[in-house]
Image 1: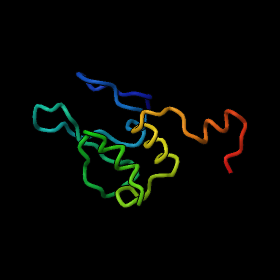
Image 2: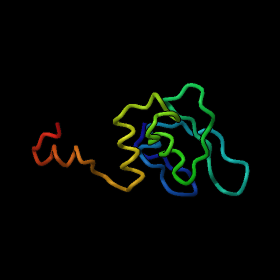
Image 3: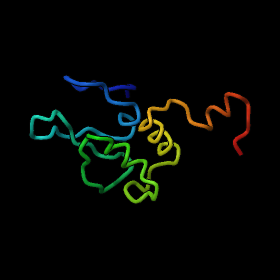
Length: 100
């Protein structure tokens, strides 16, 4: 799997989305949006790719939307939604500090 999938025209798909969702059919309107299926959920309905819906599905703090997503995936989704490349744990590990 590639790190980033391109959907022409438009922006490249974020790595967190590319790794955790499968692109389904294109929405039947002029929005150029797609429906996606979560790779961690077995019977969840398709999710429209817009306004952080996909990251929000993974981030859900009560794990109601996506109970099967691993904790590290949830953290990556939070970082992606906030535009952060580094988590606190990663920063501490780089500095040689134990986070526990």
